[in-house]
Length: 329
Ligand code: NAP
Image: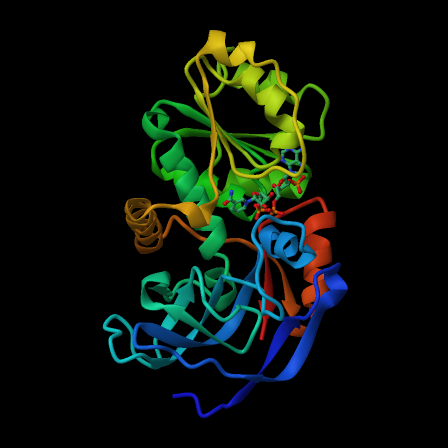
């Protein structure tokens, strides 16, 4: 049980660039309510959305000051009176918390906490939340196209969400094609179960994707950078296919007629909008992946808590992605 009253945490007092992430050594340790779990954080996941919220220009706003971060892994320190699934000492991962993840302690609703399997490190556990649940939700959005024999193109497969999309797609019996921007990324995408990997920085790579599907195009495209690729996607997808937009950082121009004559669906989602029944489905998929061992996050780089601003800088500006960026307490 935590005897700590104060903790180190990153605090954002004003919106702005990565430099607004400041370490504060005297933040009060949060107190769990009856339905909440207090977790001693060992590792915290850094996601692109953390940088959008920090900048203050995103549609999700958080009252200032705040501690960023939703995904953590650590050890249960205390549980509320109505918590039934966890006890102090349990190793857990958290998908969403209420007090901030870039901190030595965080509180989360019991429903947003899962048992960390022994074969995963705390850093890998901190990569399960937003990336893996988003990947799982992408397949919910792809509906009946998700069936053995069909093909999915994970457009941006070397990142945290993309690698989870590769693993889940393979487990669902799909033929997975993935893209990455470097040799290391391509190797990792293949290692995670893709049948073929293509370099999205190489001229003409989409022709190779089409060749790999005998000219028909993939039945599903899960898109990480729609502002760059949506036009290519609508022209590449198979007739009747579904494009799921997961990420976009700007505007895109397409010829809508393609949507009509190919009868395709272009959809998207924001993870936190998921209705309860989709959370149930996502929990099932993630739990199966952890139990059977096919869902394993890949950690690209670990940073000290004090280096949160460097992590924010690198997740947005560096290419050559190979998985998750993680803060270590
Ligand atoms: P990440 O780990 O930084 O990965 C980014 C991925 O995009 C890498 O695979 C990168 O490949 C790839 N990429 C770069 N240029 C590309 C291009 N021209 N075409 C295709 N892919 C390209 O980020 P993440 O955590 O996986 O998240 C991916 C995106 O999804 C982000 O924009 C994030 O904000 C968004 N997202 C949305 C939701 C939601 O609820 N909708 C949830 C989670 C994430 P290389 O570095 O190898 O070039």
